[in-house]
Length: 638
Image 1 (cartoon, helix red, strand yellow):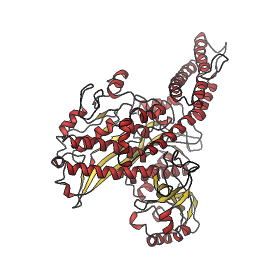
Image 2 (cartoon, helix red, strand yellow):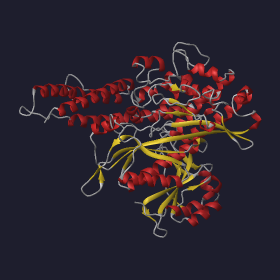
Image 3 (spheres, helix red, strand yellow):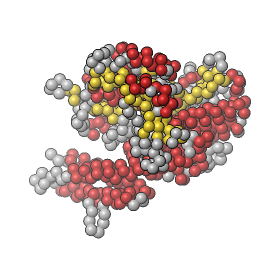
Image 4 (cartoon, helix red, strand yellow):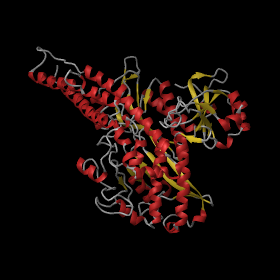
């Protein structure tokens, strides 16, 4: 579908070429790159985009590099920071990361025959000339504090060098945080719909999982992988995920009714670069698939009862030694005898103990909670798995955080956080996760704990005291969390999971000691947390009031009686009566009583958020029941 010479296109400009001289040479060689855009990330994960002509960028290079471009509080989501009466925000470029070219695949430069390009430069948001705000700044501070405090803890507790492949503190040149995400997404032909039962059946039978792609999906996937690899992301694979059904070919010889779930994976990078990479990857995928006539959604749960899209986030820590060697300090000295090093197990403990402070960033919207339902592979419980034996790495797909390891490759040891979805703000997810991990590392090293001690802590029973972990919690299970525990047991052992965005945000009040973990080194100030909380609260209430309830009302209206006296039976009469009573309870006001949807509207307007949250849970349950009853009703009709 793409007619461009991909080998002639510019994809990435690395940090060592960010001087005026180098950039001038590059732009002369690539005149198809017409614009520059500074990409700041606000508290919601939204990125800025503006078009600065290349000539202007080069003429004003030094000023733009130092001062950036100016926006205001109405252009970015920074509530309680950049208010309308205090709204000066500058978007200042980051010269220490890769800069990527965003290609407009439907706008060809006539002189070169290549797509018009915009150089996207990751940037920081600066409020009032001094305060670095926004998500990229939070992650930058998190990396700095984690590195400083972890190195300090290692220096002050030298026993740790008996348990990692580093002889002494003096051998270390720097600490390196390594991260990566796995991107799942749904792709479809515009306006086409597939029967949910057909999709559900295909999912249960795993008819699509890792199967061969065909038609436009194959072409778009292959083109995406080729382009992404040219950016230098180190693409590892692309494949079908579990969701979807076989596309159908029309009489015109074209595939339609495409509805498939895909995944693309690429190599890890440093924490900040990994988040920037993911941001660019999404744009490339969306643009390429659209050129092939396909829509892409990164929604966590685009359809009920069908596989949601996760974005598993991998977290690791290494040191670069003065001799140039890279050592993974999550790996023990003998991978066949221990699951992980004391630093690795301590990091896992910190993430588990403080997850209530991390979860608001992992699951910040209604869509995320639509995915996080018990069953299949959606992680609900705060529980980890290490494996059955250090000598035999294993994977438990029902837990929240898993240990990934390869006994033949010490560099592979890392943790996989399975909660995030493609709409999670990866900058804040990684930042909060590393701060939680730092808390565990600091506590364990101060207590001189070794791997066997920490494995015992992670494996403790509910009600058992521990030097760090909470008494009335269990943290590890090698069982199937959904099949081998009842709902009551899961809630008791692993904590009751939040059901709504509001319940998730309550952690900022209910767990102040865990929120304080995020504030170490001013990684997140109180104002930062309040800004994020205000942004998410507004998003939740607005979406609930103006999108979810109207959509549900339309679904209720479309649930209509389909039989009459001639075509129906007493069974149909009874089924419709039950459906109609539920419809009225959900969406029909009377003088005596408001319907459920109206009660939610009034609760959000009155700021009664706990009530709105409780009613939202009730609405979700009853809307699901309505769908089930109506499907059953229709099946009995000729």
